[in-house]
Length: 229
Ligand SMILES: [Zn+2]
Ligand SMILES: [Zn+2]
Image (tube, rainbow, N blue to C red; front, side):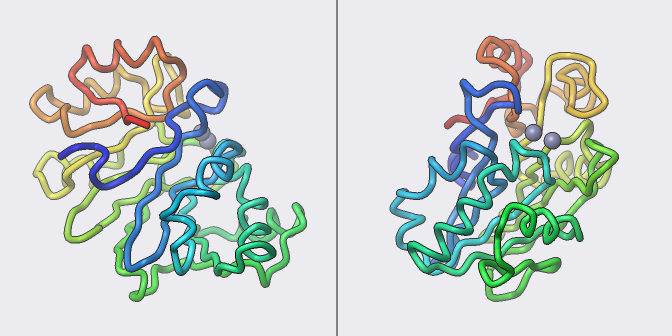
């Protein structure tokens, strides 16, 4: 499966790699525009996409609350409420969202938060708590779109066991995984990804949240893909 077939990436960088923009992806389903994370660079990349402009509704799936994942959500919500008059739904099963949005001046009428996925969205989302930051709720999501399952890690130091087993058995077609080059408790080191994923499965894993352009070649030499933007 091509990595572009299910998710359209608009950035693939880590927080301190502005050259590659914040890691984020979108897809459409049932006439709705779904966005995975909304970091600082994201609003500027999506606001004039035809798929965004024609969508009946905008849905944002947030993995966690670091700025490179939520940094432009306030602007997105204001723009949708005040300029293009589109409803925005946010899926993030955590109580941290409302106080944050209130603090950056977003009225509660500008969005609806969901902690469970409503049927009318036409997708399934299974949240998996991941190891990343101890002071906030962090999730990876298994997404079922048109019968196909993919996993989007958000920022995560490892792959949840259940997700890894489903991937190795073929139930999950593709992993999109936060990958870093150094030893880390917050992001998944390439060396750990090599341990977790046997060579024959690596073409179904795309690294994202990359710290530099140079690291892309090293990741590919190990048999993995890197998300294309
Ligand atoms: Zn990040
Ligand atoms: Zn993070």
